[in-house]
Structure formats: structure tokens, C-alpha cells
Image 1 (cartoon, rainbow, N blue to C red):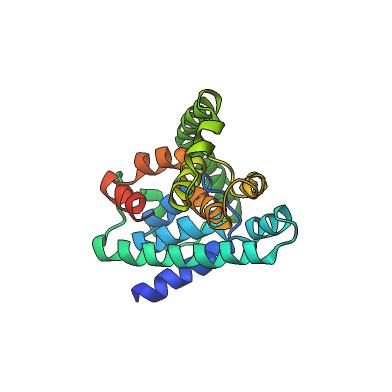
Image 2 (image 1 turned 120 degrees about the vertical axis):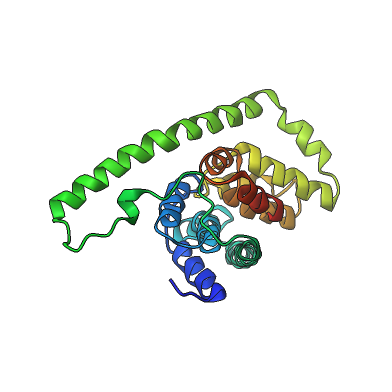
Length: 236
């Protein structure tokens, strides 16, 4: 990881763009990276670009909008630029990893002798089990609240509020946050609004949702300091 902030952010954004993970699965990965000493600003850009502009998401967007390369390209370009800007702003305010807990000893501990392949496989399985139980409860809680809103809040009332350009953009951002759709499938929902909202509002829906939604809000607040999470939410 480069020591230069801009180079570190750029490197993390490129790696994130190549990593096919959804907005929920990316959180435990970023937490482990932060525990290993990756700067918080590099972790933030990885957190934002991974679910947003990875190859699977861009291809699904291209297919959902009738092989429209323009929408897929705008989603990638605008999302990449927004992630870079947010990460650079975060780098001005935070220097440490911002984890609530101290970095994991098993991650930070260095050994002179390289562990055998079987030991590393076993460690991988143990980490997977730990992450499943650590993150699963927040994923279920977020999914419960998202399902509650989808069931009891009429979508038609939200659509009626989005008559103007600004209001339609805010409505689409709210829908993206509350619906908590998987970033690999949200384009197929977004395309259903093409006859109701302008393209700019739909693009906002496609960019904002994978960056932050109801499910991963619970995850972020549970493992990162509230102040650092609040900064990310504010700039988003």
C-alpha cells in the first residue's frame, strides 16, 4: 500500500473495482484490511467502489438497461469519482483505522516461520465462521427493517413526492437506502422507474444504494467508530 494518500486511494479504488462483492459482503473485508493496518481512507474507497463498479455490477447494469453502455459507463465513472473524493476528504480527518475494537492479534501477529497450507486453510475456515456470526445478526436486523418499510410504506406515496428534479433525486436516494437491494440486482429495479423519473435520478439510485443502505449501516456502526461512519454518511 503506497504511503502517499492519493496513490493509496487510487490503488484501493482499482482493487475495489475488480472485487465482485456486494455492499454487505464488503464490510467484513474492509474491517480485516483496517485491522491489518490499511489506512481508513483507503478502506473507505474500497468499501465504496467494490459493490458499485465491479465487473458483475457493470455488466448487469448494461443488460438491465437494454444493452445501454451509457448508463453503465455513467454509473462506473460517477461512482468512481465520488468514491475518490469521499476517501480523500476522509483522509483529512482520520489517521487511524477507526475500529471500535483493537486490531486482531491473529491478524497483526507476525511469525518468522510460514504456516503450513493445512493450517492456513483451517484458519480461513475459523475466520469465516467468526465473520458469519459477527456480521449475520446485523445483516438480518437490517433486512428486517428494510422488509418492514417495503411492506408498510406505500411506494406510490414516495413516487408522488418526486415530481421535481430535486425531489425525484431525493426520493430515489431514499428508496435506494431503504430497499437495501443487492448491487448486482438493483439495476433491474432501477430500470422499472425509467418512465417515472429522469435518468439523473435513476443514476442516483444506482450509485447511492451500493455505497450505503440500511443493512450495511448497521454493520458499519457496529464495527467502526460512530464519528467516522457519520462522516462517510454525511459526505455521501
